[in-house]
Length: 261
Image (cartoon, rainbow, N blue to C red):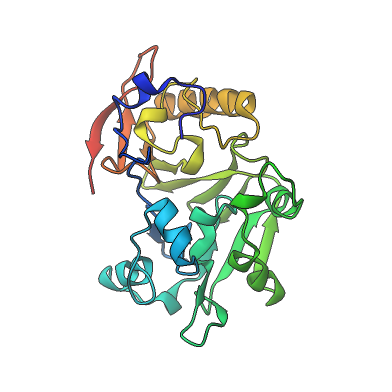
């Protein structure tokens, strides 16, 4: 998760267990707008076998996963979702696009939703490149495409009023973040551009990133804009801090007004 950053530095931020694993959240975001109900990312899903769940320490039991339970707890039903936004197609971000039913058949999780991802990400996910193919699991996205439910975007686009998809490459070539605007306030779901608050320093970049120098420049651009425009940054993988604002005028990015929900 920290690439070339030495362990004596990063373990001060998030201590690992005896297997060198660190706790991480899978924080999907439900966005209720006057025009649509949107879900940003779908977590890791329920299709992994026992070995997969052990390797990654997955805790995701629910009906069929914690994600659907949380949507119901928020007062909605999974069938209410109009749009599913995939920031990218790594298994821990789109695993809940589909689910494995009791009969073993993989089915689409959100029966009414249209799914959206960047075309560059879709194409990259199907390269079958040895460096990255373990991160892409076809059962998470190919059934959605086969059902004609994916929509592919290229340039930045306002998907519905107040919800804009921003190209934020580096982690993958087609990675995107989501900018939310309401009543003059802005929040950005940065996804794996800045997976945890420990990754706010520009050079703290995951080993998973296929273009780390591109990540560096994307972070520089996005975090500068976030500071200038007062964005609330939403962190997908931080185990404790869900969101926060950048302290103004700091050479090294840090948060103020953190939220722990």
